[in-house]
Length: 261
Ligand code: SAH
Image (cartoon, helix red, strand yellow):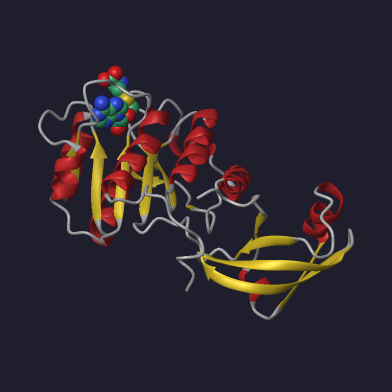
């Protein structure tokens, strides 16, 4: 069935959706009234960051203040049913931004930059608050554009050792390793009970070092091959996430109205 014309979608603080009416000021009001030139009576969709979305009819539309009435609240149909965390070895700035943008479109829930031996950039990679802010804006825009229910979380960089420990405690860890000769992604997913949180690990431009792979195996992570072709590191994460979601049946068409709760 063809979709109706898409409504503009915005991610807002969850408090905005607490009552029956919404009220927003500042940059957001400016964007609605001046940039998009929306008018009283038009509808927009507001996402509260927890996976819910509200359909809102605009009432007052001025550059300083916009108000509207909530007409329906539902679970966002675009949120994946499985939570995927991508532990991405730190990359040069522009490549990291590609991973964040494409990974968000595909459906990754959380990004964690990881310090690994062969990263071409130094320890911590200069990831300060400013950089994280920029990254958060990139995933937020990608989430709005791809009509997701919320923007993925981005955490500060951690060591590979801590990352393996954390990932194997909270769920199952899968490590993309180009030298894996036996286990495919499909085989690995077949070994995992459904419904567990999945953590995916992708190495830097130079790949993971042998002792990092040994550490992964000791931690209980599963190394997998993504086939005979070597993918660039910024390709591997989004592709791996897409393949997981495909195998889990999460890339089927879904109707927004039918999933309303
Ligand atoms: N420098 C290495 C390739 C590194 S590719 C070499 O030339 O052999 C960067 C990262 O992408 C790897 O660490 C791995 O996590 C992932 N990757 C790329 N291609 C892959 C494949 N075919 N199978 C599994 N992982 C792959």
